[in-house]
Amino acid sequence: MRIVYILLAFFAIALNSFSNSTTDVYLITVKNDSTLDELENEKTYHENKIHVDNLKPYRKRLKKLNRLSPIDLSYNIRVTPFIESYLNLNKRLIEKMKGLSSYYFPIFENMLDKYGLPLELKYLPIVESALNPKAKSSSGATGLWQFMYLTGVEYNLKVTSYIDERQDPIKSTEAACMYLKNLYEIFGDWHLVLAAYNGGPGYIQRKIETTGKTDFWGLHEHLRTETRNYVPTFIAVIYSMVYAEEHGIKTSSPKIDVNNVDTLVLKENISSDVFQKITCLDKETLDFLNPSFKKDVYYQGSTIIVPKSSAKDFNLNQESYYDLLTMIEEKIVLIDEEMIEYNVIEGDYLGKIAKKFGVRVFEIKEWNNLTSTKLNINDKLTLFIKKETNDKKNIDFFEYTIKSGDTLWGISKKFKGVTISELRSLNNLSNDNLSPGTKIILPKT
View 1 (cartoon, rainbow, N blue to C red):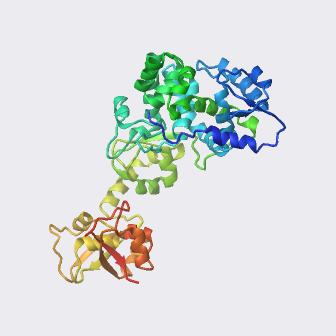
View 2 (cartoon, rainbow, N blue to C red):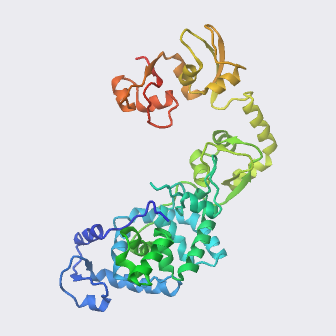
View 3 (cartoon, helix red, strand yellow):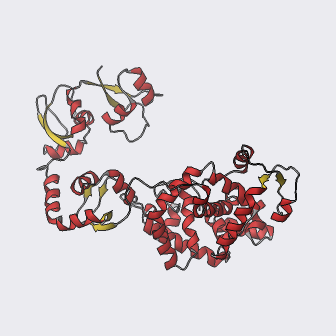
């Protein structure tokens, strides 16, 4: 499985942090088979240099963790730079992960327990996505557990125009548990399972066959860098999370109260902005609790996670809320928008008017019962426009035809007084791609 947001602590970075330390210690040579006792008696220099004083607590604490886990968490010298990185350079990441873990870890633990898997695997999404359910890699791997599309489909994760269940914390965690369980049945070794989760089972199996090595540390030097660093990173994350307090790392709690949540099953489609209004919840909270939704609409039959108090209020008043939704749909009640009457002038056409007021052509036709796009001068059109864009109706606009090589940045510089964000807003642009010959509107300055 491809990895996104994996925060690998490269040796060069970690070792650089060692050199800035003021601790009175000596440097030692690290060999692949070095034991801690041998290292403590070694006083030569080598390209891989570690502070001996830092090794003792790591070994002791990992030994303790190892006794409590079916995953081999025993100390290995290769893990040290990764631990050092999380305790120093990536200290703020651990602070953030400690805060988010109060919400995500119970979800992970419940599912891991259901499938009889080691609970320490709850730390894997920190390596994969830094606990970001919307994380997406350049290769398309998505969600907390970084599923590729086809792997997600194989493990029953739906991806539609409305939702991406790879971003659903509960459903993606169950899929990850099934996948990890299957990998263990193939390899029977948790280090190899982790390596296969990152590099793919086929890749690891080929390496075993070509090298004759059957354990991760034996394969270590034969693996590509990302997979080679994966297990050390995983062990370092566990150490850093468990012993954060001992290293002076505090918990950075999320601004959103993620405790005491409940679910709602919707009987009708509801746009997210309307749902925010009737539940008195902000977009940040709803997006955090419901990361699998791809569009600003919650479709009929979908399950929405909200704070318990909001769920209780919605259920008690749902009949009134659904009546209100009908009135909003029929434009009897307006939320954050107002109705205006627009007088068609020479040169107007529906596309131009739609861009000017930030609406869509089909909406103008629907609001005015139009069966064609033909307009006459002095025709009166009813428009429903967002309040924040209403001030645009008093601004004069002109059309500009995109030329080869044009960019939004270049256009904003060419026509003083208009910003890139204004260009996107005025023309309903979802990205910065401009096609030669396309017409956009610009405010006259």
